[in-house]
Image (cartoon, rainbow, N blue to C red):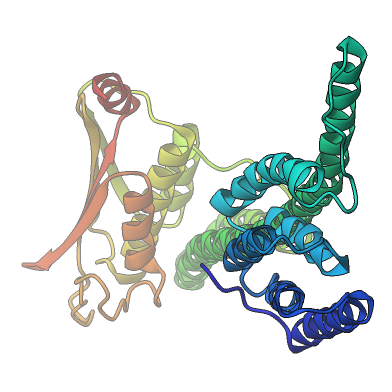
Length: 424
């Protein structure tokens, strides 16, 4: 850009300096129209040097050439040229800056010629040569004069170049500080997002843990209460026929209640202390569960087909809870004395668990659709079994037709999981 944007105080300073230089130059001038024009030109050059560095350099050359053509003696106003050279080096464009350097060298040479050969008032040289000594004298005088002009013009330009470098360094440092602040702000934003994500993950983990404990609490309490109720009803009827059989029922009730109390304490301890998961039942505990349910009056026909495959801990727990919940529902809603068919159909890819029982005639129809009213489970029974099967990577379906209720769960085996992992 030719013109630079200046603050009002900068314009006032430049104009004031130019006026002072003009007044002083006029006071020291010998007079004459040419001298007055040179002073006016140099004053104008000084006034616009920061507003337009390039044009001020051109104007300084025009005035200097006019001064030399009119053979005007150099005066104080010529100091404006030093200020112009400082300005073009400090504030001018790249082209203007190097034009100032060229002007310094050319101006020193032209000025030396002018004051030593044309206007000899200040530094006139006697060019009369009588011998080698005179040649050396002339060359020495010319050299000293040239170096003087070069220093007079070159030092302001070098000072402007130094000011330009310091200004660039300051701007670079400010840009770096701004970039560091932006980086710190971005890092803070990233850290905040990461904290929120971690908090959300913790909330999800806590909610999942609560759901797991709620399911376990339902399984424990519902199963235990169903066994206790069945044993109490059986003991009440059996007391009329055989009073001695009541003891067996009371022993079963006490054992079931103690186990349920222990399980509930473990679950409450997990809620209270955020401890690791307590030991969970697995397939090896199914025999004890079946014995307990048979003692409660169920007739269970346990059948196994195929060769047993390996199931992970979570899947074993899912199978155990599905069997426990299914048999508890049979105890509560199934026809008394009717056998319950429990089938473990082991296949290579999955375990097919099928529980079939005869529904008590007076039982109300059960909505077995996902998300329906789970009358058998009080909101956690069938939905809880479906969720356990889903979390284990399988599925669970139910069917209530022709007086029979069928629970069919599919739980993938570890062999299938490993095979899928190898293919990936």
